[in-house]
Length: 467
Image (cartoon, rainbow, N blue to C red; front, side):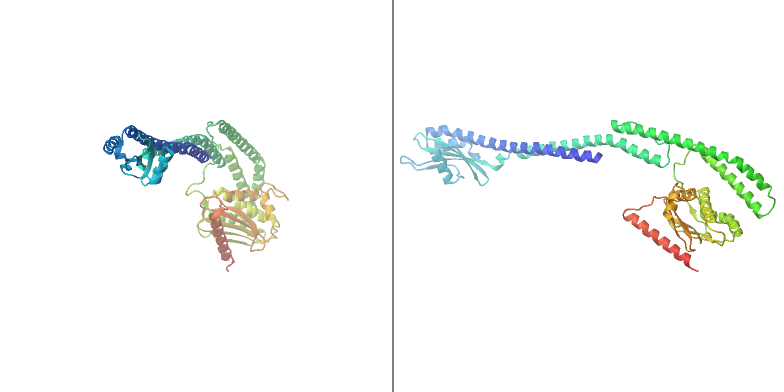
């Protein structure tokens, strides 16, 4: 908007300057020409009285010298009454032009090398017509024109610059409130719930700022209400958890009893975490800094020790790869644990006993790929499964598991894909971006990112297929 106003102001000012400066410059040029020829007429008129009295050469030469011979004056007297024609001064005009003026009896101007000449007819006492020739140099015709045009150009440029400066200031006054509104919207979208914008500027933008601040206040209130509701609902789970813990304590000894007690204890810890998180009044407003996150390899090993016990009871073969070395990712440990438990829980929930599954981790310079695959019957409609992962649960699934995984990946700039695994069943591929940038899907850089991603996935698939 700012540059649009500047361009419009520049165009209007330029048109106004051209509309006035060009005609004014032409008028100045014409005025300078008229001034030069008026001076020439005055010089010719100074000689006319002497010509009407005498035609003596000596007398006329004195008159011409006193009238301005330096300017190039000449007098042409025709022959008559036994006297030869008399020419005083340097003749520049053509003979035919002089003859024409003498015949017509009126003044005339004609172009000659270096300027112009004024031919003024003067009647002699004998009745003959003499011609006074006054040379007007080109420098005298254009005297002062260049300076006047330079002044006009300077005034025009000053007007254009001034109009552009005024338009720029007006544009800043209009654009700054809009920029602050955009920045506030970005900050609110990033989770900075304290983002507000000053209610200033033009009326429309001021009203938009008022509406934005009101919306932000409502968002904060809604989130506070949701946190309270989540905390209350989680707190209601304490009673049935207490009953489960007491029942688990009465199961006695054995692997199954110990596993049940461990699961109940973990469930209690998760409920406590949910309550504490929901009660916190400070939402996360900035991305994780350097060093934040967790070791994905360690988390996978720890969770696989938990799920391997259940897999052994159900006769499932388990394979884990890529967790021999640390793999740092910009994801909180609790979030990664929740995502892995959601995916592995889906394997146990939706595949029959004895179905094998695998967890693979691959680390590259800018991303980490985690795959959870199984040898089940697969998912007939992956798009519908991902839609459930966005909160539209159906077919007996709430969709919360895939939603947890999707939000974890997208928080780093990555994504989640569902496809066919090398085991013959379902494969959930989690792409975790390490540099924290948003996915680029358009233009040259987006194409480069997609090619790099394709090469990384192909390399990963080839490494998995090796014996």
